[in-house]
Picture 1 (cartoon, helix red, strand yellow):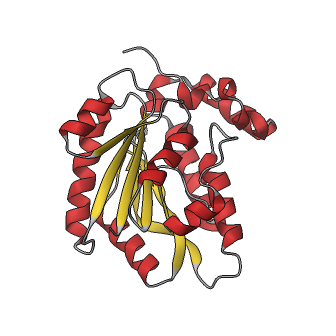
Picture 2 (cartoon, helix red, strand yellow):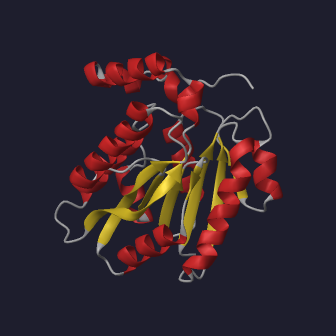
Length: 243
């Protein structure tokens, strides 16, 4: 088993079909992966997330404690692949992402990496829908930081650093990457950010929350970074409007 694609999912029945079908097609089009598996981690869902995954023939495991880091870790503990990919349930990954990442890993040019991101729709919000993602991509490219929507590493390294930090309810991918870089600080391999194409991720939060709400969370994290250690202060990532 070469690669494991791990999708943490809480109440994602509306997005999961598109994400999995797109991922499967990208895996086939990459033409380099002999064996792979897709794992959906049902993270305390109250909808048909688990049934959708099972009906699509992927591995579904349950993580009853609601936490993104814990869901990612649960998927990785069950993974058989030497290269785990962590992909958000509302993100479309192209074959280029898989083939580029795979080649970098097997050629020992990278010990892990991520990709630049692009919203599927900026929702007519210039600052939040265009400027903020562009600023994040600049940070990602400059500081080699990866968003949780697409992240890959070696299984051995994942286990050695203990996975994603359970002390964080948001931004856990930043803590994970920091530990991954520290582990490989003496290696000639690099943490690589794929730039072309960017992964396409949902802009649904721009519809769920108003400009003031989103700005509040951004300011909160800026002046009080330790907010990510408290789930009640991370509602932007955990709360959803009723259907």
